[in-house]
Image 1 (cartoon, rainbow, N blue to C red):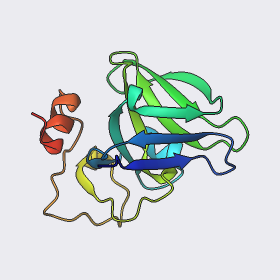
Image 2 (cartoon, rainbow, N blue to C red):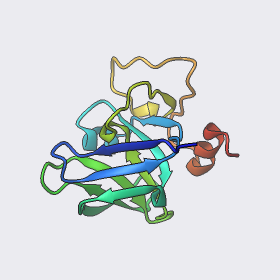
Image 3 (cartoon, rainbow, N blue to C red):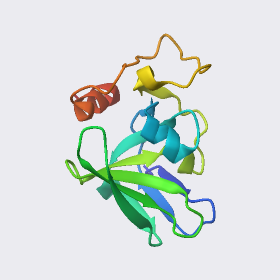
Length: 150
């Protein structure tokens, strides 16, 4: 039995990654920070153990603070500027991978929405998909529950 390999990378190809196995559920975040970093109405991400990523290339990193007050390490391509993933100071073994960096993101839909209180006007959400006004206190637990691992 072969293991599924999922690939992704930045726009210019300087940073590439591989993930073995299935992806966890994706979600959308509508907070002001995610809108700014994505230059769009929201950011679509998936939470994954960083150890599952095999990275080729050397991403640049800068630190900022998330709404929780935790240090957030933001990794991006130093050549083209593509934001690739984030890692929290609270949980550094975990990465928030940007779905738009996958080579084939076809068919990936959000399993929930965060910070809909900050949602861009005109963006319509599927009422069947759970939506949270802010961020649940235990986001890791929510991700695990949506993935069926808890």
